[in-house]
Image 1 (cartoon, rainbow, N blue to C red):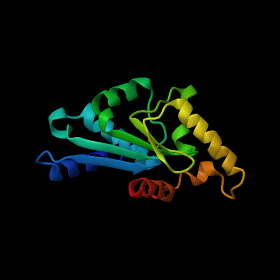
Image 2 (cartoon, rainbow, N blue to C red):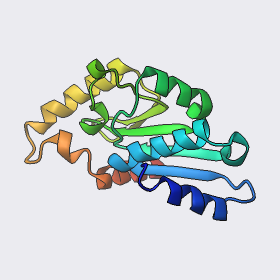
Image 3 (cartoon, one colour):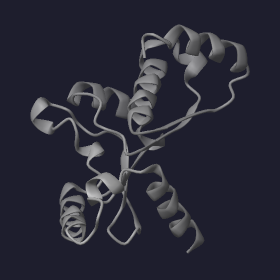
Length: 163
């Protein structure tokens, strides 16, 4: 993030002159970088210029910060921060909580059938992952890998939009 940050802010200064809304998104590592960019824009830079972040949407994003970081970011943008997690996708569970990493935003969880569930709790996600783990024994590609593919996220989004 540090290596490209000055280019990002220069570009934003050129194109973001009239308070237009800004949407930030990313998948996997791109999701983690999207969170870091949103945090820098809302926590570190002139609030009057960048307050118009309309939404932060991540897909298969790993945990990014500790409890203090997550609380600070959630205080600023939680109503507009959505983390999509696909069933048994392993990436959103790393790094582990033992190292103090936490989840932020609202979790939108695709269960083992691809149905979207909003702002789920730990136990709901845990039980759904067990179902996914059972199914993985029948599959050629383990579900914790397959469920991380962006095409799986796109397919589940389409399924939930179309009915």
